[in-house]
Image (cartoon, rainbow, N blue to C red):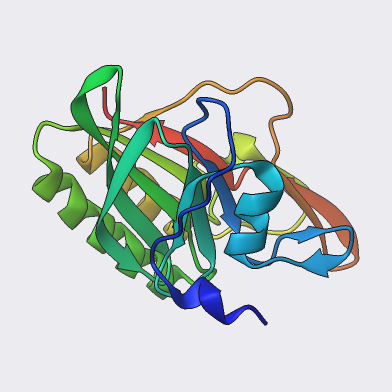
Length: 193
């Protein structure tokens, strides 16, 4: 256990590229070892980083960016971000959604409030939403929760979000359900402009 992971801000002096951030779930392992955020930042050359209230979402960035936490919960981390070469502030929300419909509804409600509070700022949301947006994002034989999918799409529509185009596989997760392999697109990036 790394107790320094409880802190909300870290500073290292290693040189890094201009990458905004690295977004991870805290159960990340490298070479079979559980990492704390401080060790992760040192290993990959990030200067600053923090985690959400449950320490399940990590965000790390270089010195050319500045970030301010606006809201944090056990399923998300919402930040205002600036870059030295970009004048306007943009908002980023990093998501690690829980699995039940009720918990997802709580997240969609909170994120809808963030949408309203964000006003006219550019807004980027990314992460593991733990739900498919359409049946095309699923391959397998297990029945899907259409109610949760409908709730997710209602949130996307009411928040005026768009799906970022991706390159590569349609599916971001695979597992075994009822003895058979299934594939789903659970990870995604959404934006408002």
